[in-house]
Length: 415
Image (tube, rainbow, N blue to C red):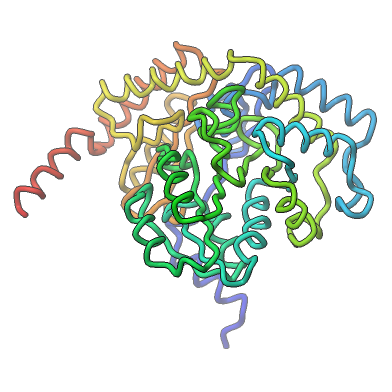
């Protein structure tokens, strides 16, 4: 007789290739990207090439000092939800700083970037009930889940295809409220959305706009305020969503926008109301990171230089990568087994950690190594990494960029 628990045993057996293994890793404050990885019960020093702490703010002295000071003053946790005993002055200061950073009326903190998207969009997309949402097909799972929970009617437009977005808007009843949701930098492909065109279309059709800037916050634009700020059009997006966990090096998420909308989400979002707030020390660390990045170009410049160098070296090595638009350098493997092997060999041979990314994070056949050079890598680090990757690419016989271009040309000739 089969039981409920038997189902999970069956599923994990059938989908063994999709199970995920996690490398136990301890980042070394002050020495990152160096970290200690534990494999087979032994500790090994590795160089991390897939961290989202793009600017190294998670180990910046100002951030660490702010965290230590807040722990000494307030303790480890917040003590409750924001409504019941869990609103510390550091939360309030951080929300004010974030709102000012993005040129918005107000901001609202959530416990993670995922929760910020899910919790905010459940409310924003679901209010009023007849809202129609237009969402990029490659939007993050947190956006997808928030839109599902909202109950809103969804129209999915092809990735970064403004013509398709325009078509869908034109086909929708002009009287219905409309919301456009997109990301500025996409987490797996690393490409950048055509934000100016999206803003123009939104204005033409009277749509509210919600832009996820989690992979741009800190890294792009004046004071690091993101891609929309870089393009000088942040004021044309109603809600900007960001994270504290990537460019700012801590943990948490937020939205920034009109005061009334922020107040409504604060009141109605179950993900905000019914959870313990961020530890004050985390908020204090994020606040220190924002204030530093608003005045320092050092970290942004180093990250940009490392990304440009890696793009050039991979081009020279004929290694295909998804996009040259950002600091996310996703090397396209296109095979689940080969991708895992490449990741394992980088670790075994070169003590380099890059996580293999497979379905459902990417589509089957688009498996990749999501490489993230950081501001803490040196030029020599980048050069050594590119050499290591090129050797493994050859040894495993992974398709090169030339191979892929040849396949595309042959397919076109057949047509």
